[in-house]
Image 1 (cartoon, rainbow, N blue to C red):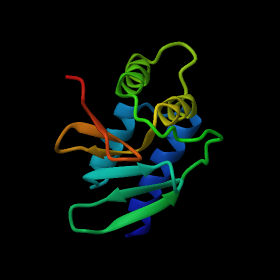
Image 2: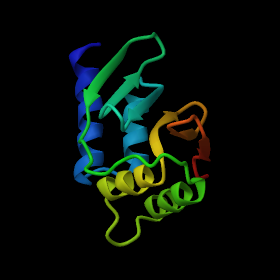
Image 3: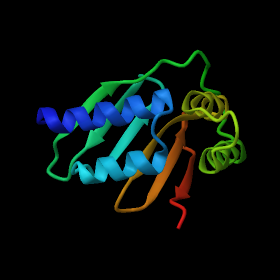
Image 4: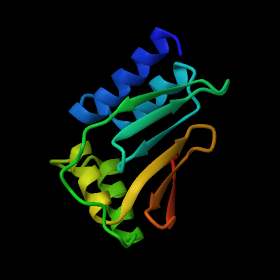
Length: 133
């Protein structure tokens, strides 16, 4: 992975974590940077950004002080996603992460070409969220 691409991924991760970038801004910047998808794994505190040529960059994410629930609560995950989409007052990415982890979400995969994010639990339950139009 070239340094420019790695810097884009780092900037997007930092932008999510410090609230300086919205999800649509992050998606646009990653697409413009040649990425096709990314994965966030709450269990390992890692994010991996993928390019279509098979190259990738792995970054360490913030470790959240909340346990991942054993049961996957898709309704609670959907509610947290809705708050993020609406940027409700007080919304933060860290708060989002804590909410979905408490709802049993172990991580998520974002596909730009598929225009969706797939949230998964510890026992492989899933919720697919299509990008808003």
